[in-house]
Image (cartoon, helix red, strand yellow):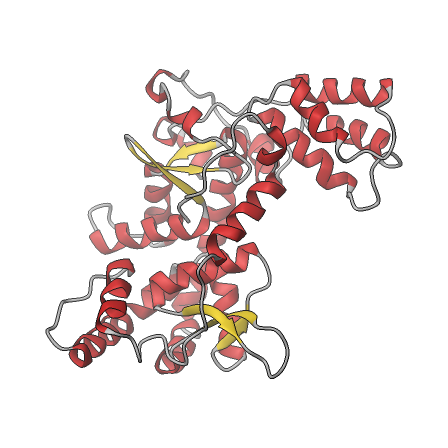
Length: 355
């Protein structure tokens, strides 16, 4: 989904992945109201118009609200099988839960909340608060009941299973490249999705649309002068990657071991650095802190160019002891040894890196 929150300048503690995720959660729940009994019914003319404007599908305009609702439903139903094929992994998981739980599912974390917002654009699902008796309201996502059976049929098609298998492979590849580069121009991932997942012609406008929306639902996105940039979720300041993009060095080939490490979120050369820092932090962190998460966030700060002092500053808030010489040495070694994110235009990547 497209980022909206602003980067906090000067304070690297606000640029850790956990803080970025918290800011994203706050942004997405801001202004949510009671969930509707039906996503396509009971809307005022203005609300219906806003839904159409935010929809990922083109809905013809009609003069009467009732006619507009009917046309919107028809457009969604006609596009539903291919839309279901191209759901992000998080969208697909959330949709399956909704179908099992009679159309409504609780939203538990940021990944599910982002998926719920994507389904709001794609299938007009409604996301909001539901009151359970005397208990506090809970965050849920709800399908229009008229989509339930068509969606069950769409997900049970043999062709759907084949598309999803190809999608998993492409998703892993793009995620791996994002970890290696930090940011990717979205044009080559879009072509990769069209070729390998949809097996469509490059001139197929519907396939282009589906591939684009899949990327928007699956990865953090920001606009930049040449189009859309996919960014790693831990990259706090994508604007730095937009500057002088054309002047970036020609990217090197991505080997199988490096790509596999990117898919797993840890490059081969980074593993011993993580292990060394983890070893000295296991008994030095506050009880609320997890060693692997702390080390990962420090590594991700280093990858985006944080100064060494910033890593020590972030770590100091998580320690329950004074920083020792061994800790300082391990932090410096990680900071010096972690490959930095430089961002690449994937149209210049070797074809083998996208297969």
